[in-house]
Each structure stands twice: as C-alpha cells, then as structure tokens.
Length: 523
Image (cartoon, rainbow, N blue to C red; front, side, top):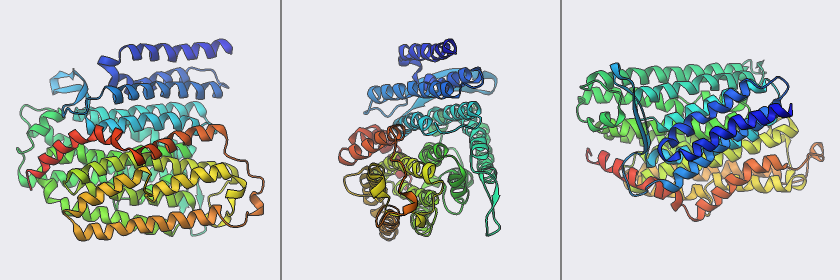
C-alpha cells in the first residue's frame, strides 16, 4: 500500500509541477481542470484507502491555490482588458470557441473559489460514507465553479454552469441528512433538499439557455463570444432587451437567491454536509450576482437601467426579510443560511446604484461574504460534530468549556454584523455610500438590516456561549488543529481586509469603473 500511496502522490505532483512551469500561457486551463486529475487518481485507488484519497484531494486543491496566488501577483490592476486569455476554435462550424479570460470582476471569485475548495477538503475529513464518490464529485464541482468565472464563450459558460448542478445534487442528496418527516408533517432530509435545489436551478438554466440562443442567432455572424455580444449591446430592440433581462434575472436570482426564489436555500444548507454548505454560501450564491454583472449589465445596459430601481428594492427586501427570518430561527445552521440571504441583499443594492462606491462595495461584499459565511458554516460544523444537534436554546456557557472555539466564533459573528475593523464593514459602508446617492429612502430602510443583523448575531452568541455552562456539555472537546486550519486563514483575511481593503479593491476597481460608466451612459 505504501507503493500505491507514492504512485498516487506522483500522479498528482508531477502534473502540478508541470502546471507551475506553464502558468504564463495556460494558467486558467490548469486552475479549471487540475481538480479532474486528482479525481481520476482517486477513482483508481484501491478500496480501503480513504485516508489516502483525502490526502490526494487536498494536494489536488492545493495547486490551484498556488495558481490563484500567481494570478493575484501578475494581474494588471490598471488594465480594463481580459487577462490570461486562452482562445482556440472548438466547434468551428457553430462558431463555438474555447475562450477563457478574467478581469477585475472575476479575479476575486477565482481566488475565493481556490481557497475555499482547498479548505473544504479538510472540512470533509470526517466524511466516512462512500469517500471516493464524495471526493470525485467535489473535485468535479470545483472544475465547474472555476469554469464559470473564467469562461468568455457563452456555450462554454453554460456547460460549466450545468456541470455544477449534477455533483451538487448528489453531494446534498447522498451525503446530506437522511430522509425524515418532521413533527409538523413536512418532508425533510438531503434527498428532498437536493431535488428542490435541482428543480429551482434547472428552471433558471432553461431560461438562461433560451437567452443564449437568442443572442447567438440575432448576432451576425452567429457567435457565442461574450466580448462580441457585449460590443453589440445596442443592437437589440428595447422590447427584446426587456424580456432577455427578465429571463436572465430569474435564472441568476434563483442562484443568489433573491426573494421570492430563496426557499431552496435554507433547506439545502440545513441538510447538506458542512463543506457543501460552505461551497453553497461561499461560492455558488456569488454566481448569481456575477452573472448579472458579467451578462445583464454589459450586454443589456438599457434594460439594466430600466430595472435599476426594481433591483434596489429587491436588495432592500432581501436585507430586511433575511435578517428577520434569521432572528426567528432555532437551528444555528438555518440562522446562518438566512443571514446569507440578508447579506447578499447588500450586493444587489450596491450593484443597482451605478456609482463607483456602490458597485465596488457590491463585488467586495461578494468576496467578504464568501470568507465570513464560510467561517460561520465551519463553526456550526464544529459544534454539530460534538453535540450532534444545532438547537440554539439547548446550548449555554460554551465559552467556559471551549474558549478558543468561542473566540473564533466571536470573530466570525462580529465580522458578519459589520463591526468596524473587520472586512464586511468596509464593503457594507461602500454599498451604503453608493446607494444613498440614488436611493435615499431605500438605503435608509436597508441600513436597519445592520441593526437586525447585530440583534440576531449577539442574541445567538449570548444563548450559546454565555451564562452558566450546560452540564450536558461539560466534557465537550476543544476545537482541534484540523478545524483550526480551516478557520484561521479565513479569520486572518477578515482582519487584514478590515484594516486594509486595497489588495482586493485594487483588483476590482478598473474593470468595475468601466462597467459602471457603460451602464451610466444609458441613464
């Protein structure tokens, strides 16, 4: 078995080293498809080597982190062009290309995806059911997520978008909670949540496909090239723009999710394993707002302006409704799920403002929410693995028994409520600064979401960690090194960006200012 382990490591390390020597020309292809190398190696490992499989998966997701760091260092902050471009003819008869590239809008999402995918492998170390299948599906999901943020051909974009759907369905349905009927008579469990997620997302994909076909056939010559479609954004009739915008909005709003398309999210989060909840909230939700910025804004700018007030109102509803629902929850994981709905409302509000502050704050909030909500779901997973439940009222005084865990939880909770000095404060402040210039009343109402967020976060922290220790949990073990490894890097990022946000804002600003000016020209 030692020979098998060495061979497995070699089969991952050698392509990884080759990829590092070829970064200058093919970094995006490597970062997208490298996880499939690890999946192939895991697929052929002998049965009973679950520990080795997990180590191979960890090594496989480590190389994309290195590649993402290379992108961070080499990315030209002053250019509005797509960078690290790879362009080759794929299916020439239909003008379908293998076309990859990233700009300031997508680069932060690539960094976030690489980091969270790597950490989530360690958060999955406790998985003991069909480990091979779990890891292969997770790595396939990683490929799909990376592909969405890098694809510049609409056909390729749609393929990556759909690639995410299948592994996520099985990861929730098989490795989530078992099927059950709650006392209120409602069917619950991983299979139910997986089907709900699948159906909602499939509806959005169908609408997106219709729009993609329209773009393809209307453009002369027919093309799926996103850059060409962006350049011809005035060639569609106002009525066509209106319908295209609505159809694409529904498809992306389901992913965000925007009220009233949000009902799949709490079920999916509650029933999914911890690592998959992290991926759902940390990355998949961002694909909805990313789609709006990548497609609706530059390709349909006139309709975007027409729907800007609607988008601001939906952002406000998400902020307030999500916060009120979070305050009413008894399950800690469901509380975090509803808080995600609330915090994604800030992204919508900032996007709708068409101001440099607002749109930069929106995309910065996407990144910050990814790191903070990842911490929150990992924290919930730590306590669930020990207590085997998530009922807030049944805890109490855990700070006495688990002081290190309580301190990290405090950092994540304070970051989530937007405490000055932590990353979310900067992004939320920018959103409000930008939105106030166009939607004074909506922004004033939305600011109350900060108060509500502080209310449910502090109330939860009081009930779980303060007061006398519940005797039932007097022997709970402290957070271990593996769990700390998943949380500490995220905590460091939250603190650093809270005091100095420029490493991320410098990546975003040039591309977002250009996009903002494009849309504002139609005001």
